[in-house]
Image 1 (cartoon, rainbow over the protein chains, first blue to last red):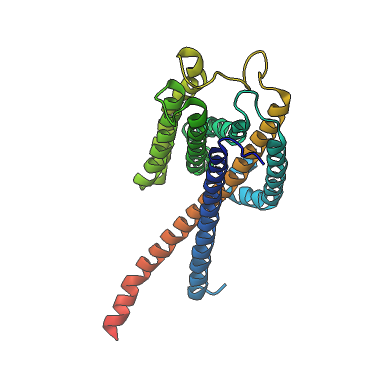
Image 2: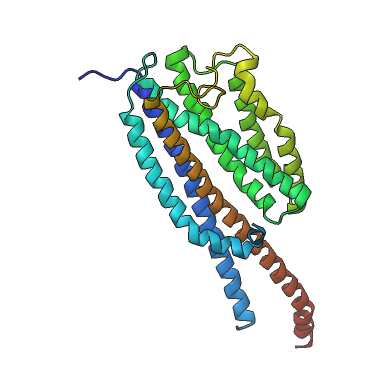
Length: 52
Length: 253
């Protein structure tokens, strides 16, 4: 079995691209969860003061 | 289109279409990656040409996202579209991310092909300038507290930065660069063999759909952030209105 020349560069390029994409997805999802939770807390606090 | 200016309509639409776009993105990536790894090696570059399938789509997105931001900037400054600044703000980190992928994968491709990770030639330098521009826009949004002022300042900087786009595109024609000239989007058609071109086009489409998915999610976040800021201000104003009453009550007790 012959080794593919420069395989390290190919793997590094795909690995880094995947990592950056995953970080972008995770940060957007994390932000969404944090915002949704903060909105839910605020609305719950408002309902406590003024019951619907 | 006008209906999309209403954040509630946008949120409802996003809830409906987002799962389908995400599914289509995943399917296209599966097909694109399969075709890329099955594609034959290049006659000169050998298997190293596989880096092209992530580098070129990332390079395409790095300028496409900037064009989207420039259009959104016009929406903010000229038409005062209520979601234009949210689109611009949400796109900047994604543009920075894809430009970073373009720069690093290009560098990893350059080392075995050119013998160096980096040269200060016109194409590489102008793309690095674009990356710095994205970082500057992200910093600008964070530095100015008033969202209206931040949106206008970011829109102006975005439009000024458009001057970098033709420099990126034509740098390989205007100057002697180590980077190869355009081989896909050029007059006279692509110069790449169809066996290599088709996987590249599928990957470019997959990356574009990925951007659309992430952009919809990020704009949704911006709408929620504004809603949260508004409700927090209302709650603070209500607390202020109650405070003297509570203080009076406390002193009479």
